[in-house]
Length: 493
Image: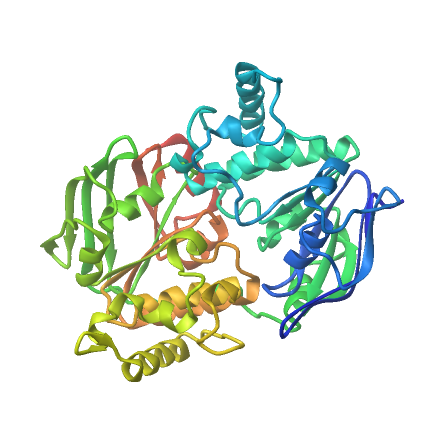
């Protein structure tokens, strides 16, 4: 018996066939994984199930009754709740206020203490170290993700749909999330789980459905498939190596950091990055990794300690200073803090260099367009409608390559990559990894922050581990194992 089922769903947008005759079903007490490359139709499918989109054809039913398609509030009241990859929190409200937004307790006077207590219980169950009275805008992306999940769990649930819920979470946080999902499964609820992390599918899912190019490719019990089969279904071909081999020949030290501190974000960080190597910065959510990157890039005030760039003291008052000095930074939140989503893909490449592309104080299309086109070709940015296409409409992998093309339109000494493959599919990940290898082969140093331990181990030449705002230690590629990294991340030096 199906709890939630969809039959013959089709949906088109101008120039794009997003779904074509897709069937899907979710059983009670099941975690059903939904896989596919970016652009395969996963987001369109769950938006239809959540009432945010009306299909051109087909129907969806919950417990045998038709869903009120096109009415998200009515769908939520029926018991379907979605946590989208792009968060929907209100930044000026507190964590507790966001969790109970639209479901406030008490009329006419709100029972704030009761809501705060319930919110804290939900957050504690997820292992989130979040104060319920903290404005959401002050929280990290990972903490905001946990608040979003807590908000979904606070409602009357029959079906929970999670779109890349673990993209910013580290190992222990993911395990707590999985414990919650197993509890929902035992209560007979249904969970639809979307993730590009294939190891998670084997850890939590009962069945898997794969979409490709808007069509249903396969559905099967997870116990009956392996990783290679899932990749073939998703991309239509074999990927012989998930992480390409590296043969680094490190040169001189390009970045030397000693005793860096920016209380209360982090208190004592030391590390080095050499030319031609990738240094992974690992640690649990909240350890301070992103704050270190922002401090190095001139985006935080009150920073202490010693930073040298190619042997010279460096302390940047702004990101613009860091860019002029030859540094580049790719943010973990590309859609809100990296891209200008409404501008064209070409404009996103050149936006940092408008002065050099101008003539007599006016931007010169004759200079800008060739520069953008050359960078897009070099980084294989694929825009179906050309570089005039809005950047926000590109796939996640192409958005990430667009940011790299922007940073590397001019020579760089050091590149900081914060969650370089967050929310992108396995095929696009392979392309990003190949780009990283090419850049280091050209002598660029890369400091990579990642919550994906396989990515840290597969791409790093050395791993620096952080614990509660301090560097807990450094591991060579040979020394770095899941156990050794997690031991440092949880126990400290």
